[in-house]
Structures are given as C-alpha cells and as structure tokens.
Image (cartoon, rainbow, N blue to C red; front, top):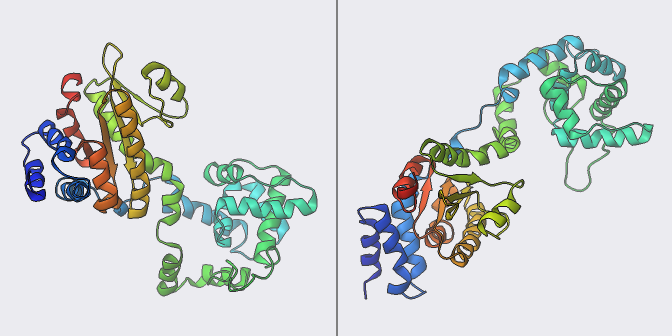
Length: 362
C-alpha cells in the first residue's frame, strides 16, 4: 500500500487535470479513513491554496459610496443649514424638502445605518400618529434624491432633531454608551459645527476607522455584488466557449428539479447540460474570507456530493474565492474530497475547460 507522501506526490505530479481527478478518487481505496483527511488537506495546501486570491484587499466600485458623491451631498447640507447653524426640526424639514439628498450626510452624522435610522423614525412617528420611513425609502432618498412628502420630511427632521438633542434613545443601560458619544456629536450640533469649521485631527479620523472598520459598511452593503463575482466569472467563461448552462436562483429551482432531477435545495449555482438536455455537471461557487465561514460553507459540498452520487456520479465542481479557504483541514480539504479534485478559483477558472466533461462540451 502506498504511503501518505507517495499518494500526495502522485496526485501533485499528475500531468493533466483528468489524471489528477482520477488519482484523487483513488484515495479511499488506498488509505484508511484516519489518513484520508491528512491527504486531502495536504493536496489542497499544495495544489489549490496558491490560486486563492486575496480579495479582502479590494472593495467594489459603486458611485453612491465614492467621495465625490458624498462631498456633493455634504456641500448641499452645509449650504441648506448655513454651516449647521440652522438645525431646528423646522429647518431640517425645509432642507430635506428642498433637496432630499441632504439626508445622506445628516443621517451619517448620527452614526446610524439606513436601517437603524428607519427604525428610529418609527419611534418618532408612533408618538405623532405619522408613518415612519422604511429602510428602502431612506435608501432611495439618499441614493437617488427621491422626493419626499411633507410628512416624510417632517418625520426625518424630527428624528434627526431628537437624536442630536439626545432625547430619542435615553440613557444607555449597563456598560453601554450612546452612539452620539463620538468626537463630532458629543455635544450635539455644537461639536458638529466645530468639526465642520476647524476639521478633525488625523488621530481622531484614524480612531473612527479603527472603531468602525475601514470599508466595513461598503463591504456589507455590497455583499450581494461581491458574492456574484465568482459566478460572473464562471458565466463569462461558459458563454465565451458555448457551454450549455443554467445559472440558478430562487426563480428557477422548480425548473432545475423538473428538467434535470436535481432535488437538493437550493440547487447548485450552475447546472451544465449537453445538446440532448442531459445533465453533465453541477457547479457551486463559494467565497469566504475567514476560516469559520469557509468551514460552514464546506458542508454544502457534502450535500451536493450526495446529490451527484444519487444522480449517477454527475461531476461536482467547486469554484472558490477568498483566503478563508486556506484553512485546509476542515475547509478546502473536504471540498477537494467532495469534488474529486475539481476545484478552481477565479484566477485559474479557465483550466476547468480542460477537465471532463467540459472537454467534450466547450
């Protein structure tokens, strides 16, 4: 029986992807269950980790979050409030009605997220018998300058006023502190005016970045966009090479089950088929930038593996992204096992076309 190192070396030195897949599939026949995790993990470390891109170093580009967009809205807020001197509830209502986009910098001053600010408007609206702003309404106002009604502008203005006066949320319990206890709002509009006029020391700017995490909000807000980057790369590859595929989603789960017999829910991110409408492969795309998230997402491949075997051994392919997968023992190693070595990243996704069944489909 081959030693662990001999098996690993044999897999790593495979001259083609198909031969690598064949050798990965031999692992259960050559080694006991105690040795198999070690082999999968080491194969993952040597062959697959080098292709994982550090996507934590990048953030999506979206005009709404760029400096020029915010500076424009901020300049309008400064003008509308006479450099934050006209900040009564009536003044703020007038400013929002005149140019709704000023809500963006005013809301950011409070330190609340859009959903949190919408929740705050509910507290104010309930006491006055008015309708609160929804998070989607706040977003459309800030992102598109969507016009507000008199009532909506009044609720937004009263909420801003109550927050900045320190009256809305009351004293924090226990060891908590208010989100208003930050350098620019510690004394309400007075400190806002001081910071706007005199600037803020760089150390305070960096501290706030340390407090909230640079780019954290834009990353959270664009999580769906970032999550689709891997799928977009796969779709572009298939489209370019005339591979027949369906990119699945909530809208076509029933179709995937009826047409191909894939019963696992949710369906894999892609199903690949031939001209006779036979299912030929299933693909799952997963991004993770921390090991815990990658470990949880790795469990999905075990479910898909069971489904692929139920369907007669349909090839399962994984396309991964993010450094969370570098934790090989309980993340990447099991995915390599469940996909028989058919694991790619955005950086080498084109290699997929050299692996069966794509050699006959592309």
